[in-house]
Length: 192
Image (cartoon, rainbow, N blue to C red; front, side, top):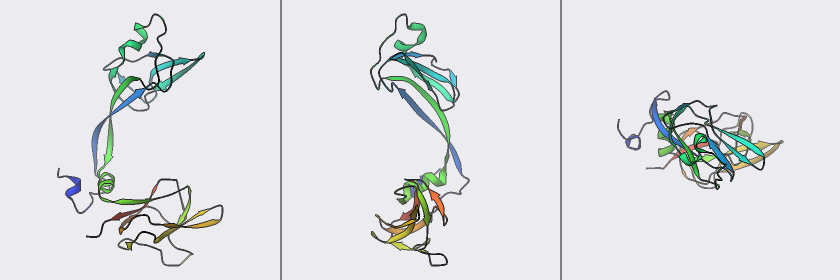
């Protein structure tokens, strides 16, 4: 497959690839961990990887992904523990390899677009009032400081200004949609 950066047009919306990823689980605080899984073991989302005891309370750490355990810190394996062993914060305990479906179009957009993102959670509108022309549409040129949409929170309206420039390639929301902080509002491509 050719490099996604070399393509001018994005892949189809339903194009996917399977990608292998690694998730490392480190001690989230100091305490006495007991690793309950072994290398090569298959785990599910709800599989408990390890328990960590701290000040007479025990916390269970679950995988959160479906995959295979690639590495464990043998020093903290439950079967090796005769007396509780103390672990410092951020020590690697378990590593899991898992597969994830990657949307090729989203991956291409991440590499080729710059994004204007939601600064906070609220309802967004593309125009200043109903039936008005939207501030921007696909193909529009946007400069730094241009108004690109309106954000409404508790009946207060705030203009959202662009902090980047380029040509609008994609608009990610419809009028009156509630969008969370950090979500993509508009994808821009550099003018050529």
